[in-house]
Image (cartoon, rainbow, N blue to C red; front, side, top):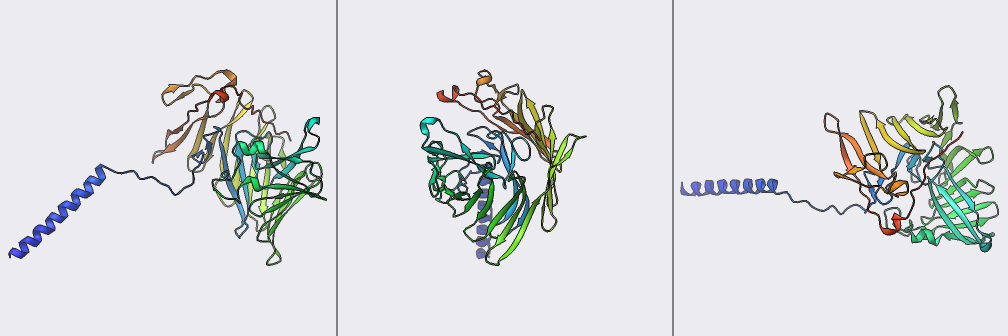
Length: 377
């Protein structure tokens, strides 16, 4: 009997101790650091907190899932290029070209090329690119941070220092750190004509009207000696009555994505909506603010949306304080100020992020980038 009483007391004591320990852990939670991800300058996957620009990338269609997948990706960048194949600020991943930059007479022995890819521009410079000569990424670009951390991974494969342009008899070759080689056609436009992967697979790009309009992309499997799949770009269709244009891309098995572009009063086109066979529809709304196009809302199915507010759209109130702008030359003008989205079971709209930019002395003297984009068809 005494033994049973002692065992019961121990069990009861153990239960009370564990219960008290559990309660104390709930009352005083300890936040642990999450160190598994790479550092990133992007908040909510769409705001670059260094530049203050709104940007995003979406995969709309996957034609092939192999070692070297073939997909359709669109990218939006708040500034950086004046034209886009899907309207102002929007571009697709298959559009890439190299243009020649003019230099002053004092630098006649030098040569510059600009690689335009997904809305970004990378400058290559060096001595005149005769056959076999190589041009490297401009040193001025590397000084601004264009190094091996540009893609969020510290690796020689992503280091832009390892990119080179070589002159060939029929065009230019771009060699990348990953081992991928791209060939660009000779001529005025110098559009991407073929891309060879380290696996041996390669993609071919066909155009119409002297390399001006992309017609199709074909993926070839070298090991199996066959064509895996292809993407076909329909001609741009115009609806004059509704002032709307649309472009459709289809795969070999019949799947598709369609982009519809609407026109502003000043004839500037912008991407209005996306429809696709493999996913949900999306819609975008813009504001033409004093000649500058700003994307201010992204809508998706199920009452999901994201609203973007910018500096310059009054009031400039952030974190309970009013930010004083230094006139039209303030570099914070048109940077992202806040993001709004619906949350909870009742989809109540709340502010999910606010952004405050602290300028140094050199930035206070800079002028904001002008973003009055045009896309005239």
